[in-house]
Amino acid sequence: MAIKLNENPALGDFLVIDKGVEVGGTWRDNTYPGAACDVPSQLYSFSFSPNRDWSRSFSPQPEIHAYMKRVAEEAGVLDRFRFGVSVESAAWDEADNVWRISTTAGEISANVLVTGSGGLSEPKLPEIDGIDTFAGEIFHSARWNHDYDLTGKRVAIIGTGASSIQIVPEVAKKVAHLDVYQRTAPWVLPRNDRAYLGVEKLGFRFVPGFQKAYRTAIYWALESRVPMFTGQLPQMRIAATAMAKRNIAKGITDPELRKTVTPDFEIGCKRVLISNAYYPALARDNVDVVTDGITEITPTGLVTSDGTIREVDAIIVATGFYTTDQPIAAHVKGLDGRTLADAWSEHGMAAYKGTTISGFPNLFQIVGPNTGLSHSSMVFIIESQIAYAISALTTMKAKHIASVEPLRAAQEEWNADLQSRMQRTVWNSGGCASWYLDEHGKNTILWPRSTFKFRQLLSTFDIDSYVTTPSKEQVA
Ligand code: NAP
Image (tube, rainbow, N blue to C red; front, side):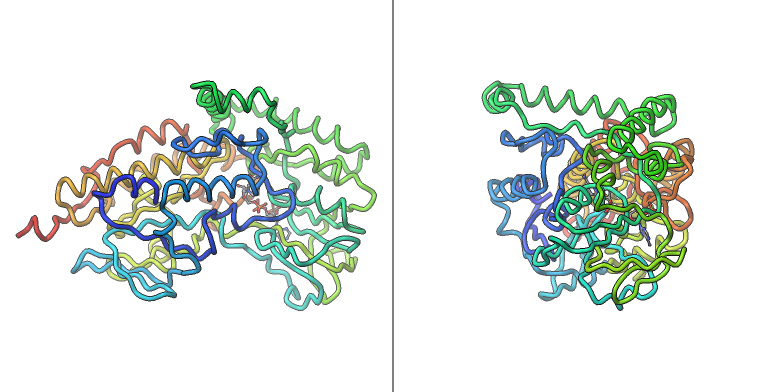
């Protein structure tokens, strides 16, 4: 967003507030051993800034973070960032058509507020009795304590999601013993990860069009999987399930353990994970998979429902993030002083085109409600939303408009269509609980159509779907 605003200076001045110490978001915060992207590198990069230097087909976290820092630096936008500053509140001032924003570094006002605060940014800790009393080392996967050496220790990891399955193989190698607390077994497909060949790297660098063609091929390969999730081609799930079961059989020989790690819901219902190292790690002699629920944590260990106490030196909490209750929502106040959290309290998160929200003029959310993907690159969605916001700002400038707010009817129509499509998706009907569903069982996270449809629908700012206020000079 900063780069695109910088490329359009006529749209006005801008400032980026980030509570972190540098750019990178999730790739700055998630530094756990084994952290890497599940989306192929070529697609997990900005279309306007291809990376000729990816070392592998799936990039490790340090490379992605370095790429992001380089892109921001080369675009010359870093001096617009204020790092280490948090937004305490942002309130829409209807009289002056500005956002009044209180930050830990003082007050500012802005005509337009864009939130890029992320869908997976606020660690969610499990509510387990006694967790605060644990006397050993305990940290969340997204807040890894690199000062604590796990070598030779007895360790527990809670959770078996995307973060955990990357952590387990790395940690298992160095600890004395690892207990993996599995509440729900995930489906895990093989990870076709490999180092790029020299000839490919040369191609990316020197052959015009090669990298773009490569990226386009990956885009369509991933896009072809949409019908598997959205219900048009559920048969695709049969082949995927067989592949996942082969992955279990390849990594684990013990029939009991195979059974323990085989999920009992339809593939795709939760995020499909990819790893070649997870199952072999679970099969190691120093690793146990614990499926009894954790009832209590004592100062020295974890107690499960069967009464067993397992003593450990450290607990890794890989229990995910606040997702359907967006952390920034309580801090953003729109018309009549209503917060986003208030507006969403009854029926869950909802927006127009995942980006703008009725009752909240001049607010744009990057990665807002129902923009998430389970099959492709979020960078594609993010770029679509940024283009939409830039188109809105351009329209506002050209037509001397001070504020835009989506019509309630437009937002309702958008969400009614979206939720009716959602009914036949595997996320809603596959027999699992996941972070895609809110407390009412409503999927307010994912986009239930193709990504090209999303891009098409957001290709230009559709002012007819908005309530607008003319700018003061226009009125005068
Ligand atoms: P997650 O997918 O939400 O997984 C959380 C895990 O913790 C689940 O296994 C969950 O079990 C378990 N859990 C939660 N509360 C628990 C409790 N009280 N007791 C026992 N177990 C509990 O979180 P995540 O692994 O951090 O991943 C979040 C998302 O981040 C991913 O889905 C993905 O979109 C993204 N991510 C991507 C990558 C990548 O690209 N490689 C890597 C990491 C994360 P249940 O299943 O039973 O709820």
